[in-house]
Length: 189
Image 1 (spheres, rainbow, N blue to C red):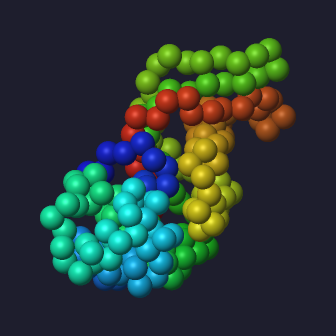
Image 2 (image 1 turned 90 degrees about the vertical axis):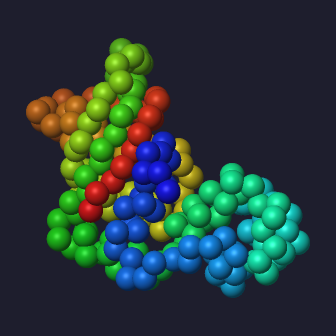
């Protein structure tokens, strides 16, 4: 699976994969059997853009009409749901040890201040350690399957504090940072 992506949720899932104790199934049929063990076809089908009966057919090994896009969605769903206990334990250990979560991103930012909103046209390449509070918020939001917009807001707040406002005292940090265009996101922990 390519490591370049623009989804904060998927970037967290890829970083969590480094902590797995076992690898997930590799074949699409085995992956679907695992997913169907935990979810009903009716719940899983909309996520994979497929019909419920197609999922059961694919799980039985008949994958002739499985498209590459659907195979990618199945892989993402496996990455999202594989070993949740290991994921929670790894996140808790990271947070107990100071919450060192490094975010590497290529993005454009917008800033909201008292005088208005400013969109920076530059594509910034940043590698920053998120503050422990924002790492905790990011993990908590991911555990409850928060929307991508909320994850981006938490990431933008953390990058704002770690990079843009690190030299300012807290009472002078009057701007809010938002990610207006995300080209790449990776996490390391």
